[in-house]
Image (cartoon, rainbow, N blue to C red):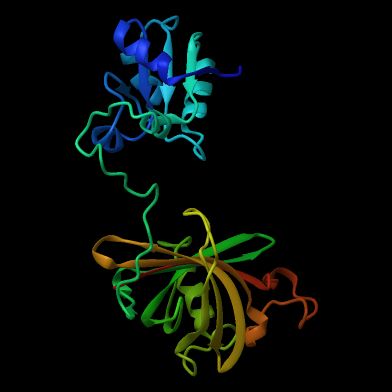
Length: 304
């Protein structure tokens, strides 16, 4: 059901008459900072959105005007759709949202009516060098075969990310002797698999206890939205004594106290580094020993 458009004059009439609910659908902290006088708040991003509205408007025939962040944000339209599907029959949307109201010089209420923070956290790089925090960083791997998959972890021993112009270079070391399985935890097979992964069939940890990833170029992606990777990474990964270039997209985002989180998902062909066990490209008549060549890696490195 298409939304009925509402104007700022409709909002004024609604708040003056008291017969319509003006509903701000942004998060409560944004509402507290600035909102249209007389508006009520129910955050459309919360799973309890309809319950919040039901507490404000138990009568589903009551007229409601919803507004949000305006151009480029589907918050108000999404809220109207949810309300229509929940049985509310008299819902209108202030297209242009709060910015349209402000642009016409109409008053605002709240604790920060003259301040407008960015819509998403801004990546501000205040340091020239960032160091990995191993205790707060995670690497999760997934390997597969026809029978299913195994997952586990690998420790990040140390790492450095150094700013160079708009981008970065860096070096990270992974502790191969820390490789662990998680899906078989508590069974006898967990130790069997972990020992196999550490053996010469896979990562030959006794001879090659570390893996290094040297970032040779980490360039920003222009105009990347907050929910997509914002850097393109080129690196040289050295595993089992073999160096190969890799490239992947990464998401560098701000944390509190000038810390950063570097996150990435990538699929690696293990055979490029001589990890050949179970690969049909190198062995025949493998029976149930077939292991898929691609290994998935989910990475989150906290940097301080």
